[in-house]
Picture 1 (spheres, rainbow over the protein chains, first blue to last red):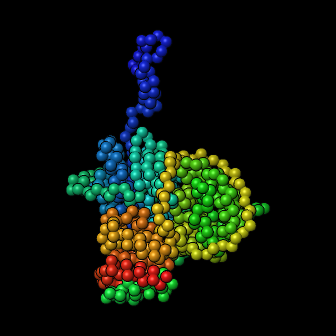
Picture 2 (picture 1 turned 30 degrees about the vertical axis):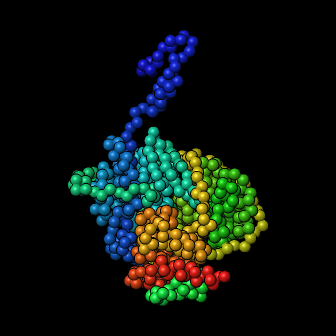
Picture 3 (picture 1 turned 90 degrees about the horizontal axis):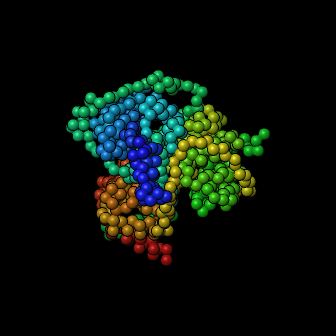
Length: 295
Length: 325
C-alpha cells in the first residue's frame, strides 16, 4: 500500500519534488485511519421552570417538584444542539441523551429524542432523591462508562442546583480532560477546541478526545422538535436503568457525602417607598441615595 | 507532628500572569479565619513570591506555593491541592467559586472522596465541623450543608463574605507536587480582556446599576453607564437587554447570568422577571426606575420612581453631582 504513493525520482540523487508532501500525507494516513464517526453523550436535566416560583420542601430540603412546571433545562438543550449540529455535518454521529432524574421525567427526556438524539439513557432510582454532587457524578460517570463516548457535552451550570461542578467531576472519574465553560466549540481531527471565558480574559483551549466539555449560553439556542421528530422519538431506544444496573449503592456510608443540615424560606422582600415622577423624581432619587449613604 | 495548626483551613488561590494574587483572596482568607487557621496554597505559573507575601498580609498563617505548568487546564492545580491537603490535613478546603475554582474543587473532591459544597455564601464551625451556608433558588431560600464526615471541599461565592483576617507574618514554603498523570486539556492561548473603563467588575461589586429592555437601545444604554460612574458602580443588565443586543452578555444579572448581592442595586427599565430577581434580590438596597407602576420590580424595591428613566436618571445624576461639588 505504501508503495502506491512513492514515485521514483527523475534525478537519481534527489527525492522527487513532491516527496515531502506525499510522505507526510502517508504518515497521517497511517496514524489516523479513516476517522470514524463520533459517539456523543449529552447530559440533560429536568428542572423546575425558572419562569415560575420555585419551592423547596422545608421538611426534607428537597425540590418540591410538584410546585412548578418541570422542563428540560435550557442549557442542556443548547448542549444537545452542539451535538446535533455535529450530527448534521456527519450523519453517522451517534447522539445519546443521558439523564439522572425521577421516573416521572420520561416525557421531558423524550423531548431530547424528538429534537434529534438517537437514543436515551434514563437513570431512575428512588434512592437518588436528594443525591449530592458526589453521588450524582458517580452515577453519571458509571452510566457514561457503559457507552464509551468520544465526547460528553453538558451545560455549564443548571438553573436549579447552580453547581457547575459535574463536568470536572466526571472528567476526573473517567480520566478525560475537562474543557469547561466553552462559548464556541469546534470538533475536528480527534480534538475538541473552543473559547473559554475566565476571569480577566478569554482562553483558546483544546483537548484530545475523549473529553468532557461544558458549554455556556453563548452557544446557539436549541432547535424545536418538529412533528416528524416527535413521532420518530416514540420509536427510538429509551433505556431506563437503576443503580443496581450501575453497581452503585446510594446508601454506602463509607463515602463522604454532603448533606443539607438546615433549610429556611426567606421572608419575601417588602415593597418600600414608591414615588411617581412629577418632574422631581430624579431629585428625590438622589436624596434617597444620599440620605442612605449610597451615593 | 504536623507543623500546621490542628484547625487548618486550606485556601486555594491562584496568582495571575503578573504574579499578583487573585482578587478573591481577601474574602476567602477572611472566611477561613472565622472557622480556623487559614493556610494558603498559591498556584503560580511564574514566581509566587509576591502573591505569597500578599497572602500573609491577608491572613494566611502559612503559605504553600506550587508551580503549575502554564497551559495546563486544571489537572496540575488539582495535583497541587492534593499534595497540600496531604501535608496540612485541613478541616476544610476553600476554593473561589469561579469556573477554574469549580473545576479544581470538583476534580479534587472526586479524587479524595470528599464531600463538596458549592457556592457557599457563609462559613461556620459547629461541634461537628465546618458548615457551609447557601442561598438557594436566587435567594428565595437559605440552606446550609455539611459533610457526613471528613473535610468538605467548599467553593465560596465571590462577594459574599465580608469578614477580613488580620495580617500574619510571612511563613512560606514551596510544595513538592507529584504529577498524577491525569489527561488534561491545553490552554493554547490567552487574550486578556482589556478593561476599557475604570468601572468596578460586576461580580463582587458593592454597587450595581443595571438596565433592561426599557432602556431601548445600545446608544441609550450609555445613560446606565453614566449613572454607574456617578455612583462608582458596576454596570449590569437584564437578560432582555442582553438578548436585544444593548450590552455584552458578561453584564447579565440573573438566573443564567451573574448573581450579585451588592449594597445598592439600581434597576433601570427592568420589569423584574423572576429570572432577573433570582440574580439580585439579595441586594441590601434595591432602587428601581420604571415607566410601568405595576412592574414587579417595585414589589421588591426599597425605593421606586414611576417615571421616564430618560428624565429621572439625568436629573438624579445632576443632583448628585451638585451635592458633591
